[in-house]
Length: 318
Length: 236
Ligand SMILES: Cc1cc2nc3c(=O)[nH]c(=O)nc-3n(C[C@H](O)[C@H](O)[C@H](O)COP(=O)(O)OP(=O)(O)OC[C@H]3O[C@@H](n4cnc5c(N)ncnc54)[C@H](O)[C@@H]3O)c2cc1C
Image (cartoon, rainbow over all chains, first blue to last red; front, side, top):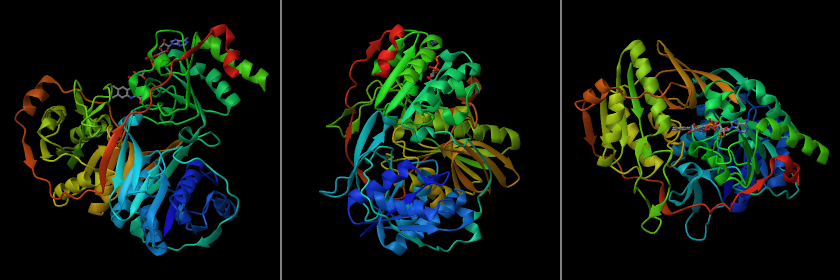
C-alpha cells in the first residue's frame, strides 16, 4: 500500500506544513510517495523529502502548474493516486490544498476530511480527530470509504528527520486545455515575509494601535522574533493592514507556538482564530480586556510603552 | 442571471460550544442560529449582482424544519425563492450531493456559498459540487465581478491574492470582503413571508464519514500577569 502526499512550496522551498504531511503519511505505515507540481522546486529539495519518510517523489514538470489551478491540480493528483495504486492521499490544509482535495475526493470516490489534528487511529477502522467550531471543539470521525483524502492542520504530526533521500521521478499526467479553463491572470503576493499560517511566532495588532502609522513597533518586534504579523478584523476592514493578515473566525486561523496580541480586545470571533496557539501573550491597557482570560501571559499596559521595551529587552538578551 | 446561494444554519459566533447525549450531539440549549457568516457574504454579493444586472436568486439549505427561520432571513435579505432539502446535513459529501442534484438541470450561472461553514469548517462542499457538475470551483473568493459570461475573481492565497478568470457556470466559495453583510429591512421581512419555500426530500443517503464522538479542548490554565515595567521577565 502506498500513501500519496501532495507537497506545496513557497519560493522554491517545500512548506513546513507539507513536511508535516509527509511525516503524517509515514506514520500511517506503508510506502510514502510525494508529488510536487510545477517547475519551481529543484530536484535536491525534492530528494530531501526522503529525510521525512518519502521513498519516492514524483515531479510534474509543467510550467502551467507553477500556478495553483484548482482543476488541473485535482486532475494530476487523481491520476497519480490511480497510477501509484494509492488508497490514501495526505496533504496540508491550505488555500490551494483544501479546494483541490474536495475535487480529488469526488474523482476517487474517497472519504474526505479536512482540519485533521492528530495521527489516525487504525486499530479498528480508520478514525481521525478533526477541529470543528473554529477550533472550539473536536470531532472524532470514522472514514468509511476504502479510499481516503486527509487534509491536516498545522502541528498534526511532529516533524522527525530520519535521514536519507528519496528517488525523484518525472510523472506525466494527461492534461487538456479544459483543465486550465480557469486562468490565473495575476498574483499579488508579499515575498520574503514569513507566512502567517505557517509561522511559529505571530505578533498581531488591533484597533488599540490607533492607526497604520503605528505598525512600525509591531514590525520591529516581529523582526526581532522572526515572527509573522497579523491583525484583528476591524484593522483589515479599515485598510490599516492587508486582508491576508486578518486573524480570527472569518480570517486566518493560526497555530503558532507563540501568539502575541497587542491592543486587541479578545472578542470571541478573534479568539476563534488563535485558540490552537501553544502560548498566548496579551498586551492591553485595559486590565479587564477579555483577551486576558485566554492568555498564558498578560501585560496590562500601554502598547506604545510596552512593545518598544519588549523589543529592547529581546535585543539585550540576544 | 440565475444565481444559487447555498446557506448553512449554524450557531452564532458567540455561542458556547458544548455537547450532550454522551458527546454525540451538539447542545442547542440557549444557542442562537444564524446564516453562516461566509454564506452571508455570498448572499450579499448575489443581491448586489442581481441589482446590477437582473436575474433571480434561489437559496438552498440542507436541514430540518428548524432551519426555516434562517432561510426566511435569507429571503428577507433579497433571495427570491428557497429550497430546503429535508434532511440533517450529516457530512459534506451528503450535502454536496443534494446541492448538485438540485443544480444539475436548473441552469444556474453562478453557484455561490461560503468558503466553509463555521460549525464543521470543512471547506469541501464547493469543490465537491463543482466536480459533481463538471464545472470550475474557485475558493476562497474575495471579490467577484461578472462581465458577460466571464467572471473575474480574486482568490486569497497565503500571503496575498491572485486574479482568477473563468467562464460561467461556476461555483465560488466566498469570504470577505466580497460584499458587506446586508441587514434585512422591514419591506424585505414582510415580503419574505410570502416568497416560495419549497421542501424537497433528499436524493441519496450516501455519506463518507460517521461521527464517533465530540470532544472539547482541555481548559486553559490561569493567566500570569507581568508588570508593565518589568517586560524583560517575559523574555526569560
Ligand atoms: C460574525 C463575525 C465574525 C467576526 N470575525 C472576526 C475575525 O475573524 N477576527 C477578528 O479579529 N474579529 C472578528 N469579528 C469582530 C470582533 O467581534 C471584534 O469586533 C474585533 O475582533 C475587535 O477588534 P480589536 O480587538 O482590534 O478592536 P477593539 O475591540 O476596539 O479593541 C481594541 C483594544 O485595544 C486596547 N487598547 C487601546 N489602546 C491601547 C494601548 N495604547 N495599548 C494597549 N492596548 C490598547 C483596548 O483596551 C481594547 O481592548 C467578527 C465579528 C462577527 C460578528
